[in-house]
Amino acid sequence: MSKALLIMAHGSRSETANDEFRALVERVAQSAHAAGEEFVAVLPCFLELAKPSLVEAIQQLEHQPVKRVQLYPLFFNKGKHVGRDIPAQVTEARERFPDLTIELLDYFGSAEGLAPLVLDHIAGQA
Amino acid sequence: MSKALLIMAHGSRSETANDEFRALVERVAQSAHAAGEEFVAVLPCFLELAKPSLVEAIQQLEHQPVKRVQLYPLFFNKGKHVGRDIPAQVTEARERFPDLTIELLDYFGSAEGLAPLVLDHIAGQA
Image 1: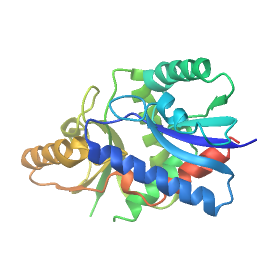
Image 2 (image 1 turned 180 degrees about the horizontal axis):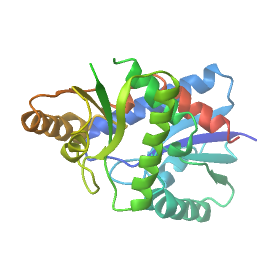
Image 3 (image 1 turned 60 degrees about the horizontal axis):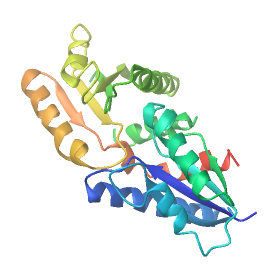
């Protein structure tokens, strides 16, 4: 089943920060392609303060053969955004796009590799 | 020279989120110890909304043999917090603690391993 990956950041009033996130998503897309992952598209979206929203990002997929969308929240902690606001936006998106299967993935901060990456990054700056 | 590591998060109104960050810092401390890194202490601190602040975290080191403090900003992007607010707090801390060498490390989002970690985490949820 053809699937797309949406990565969601909080969004910032700083377009420089938003562009830095978009560049990260592009690097993830390149890594996915290199690893043979089968995403039709890998796109950024934002919870608030920047565009596109989740619904707008899904609209960008309109003419692509996508049946399944995975949404990955790039958030460190399970605060109210991960625990409440993002699930609410997913519910809204499912109502808007009933033909799509929209899956909400575990947020970034739950990745086991986070602590080792932090330590590696710090040790590399010794 | 005896050094301490402070890891700084933004801080949240949700103590659950703050505690999740503190647990991450504890995991980094354990990884550092296991890897033979020579930190006297590895402590969390917050830019705002939670305690301790940078200055308060440094005060916690008062009776330890620390000459050098490394501060690592756990932020995804170089917005105004990383670009302006954190350097301003470092300047303030250097004035308060002139006998310490306080180094500001590159922020988390600049880690090359970030995109691969994101992809690994997503692929593991397929």
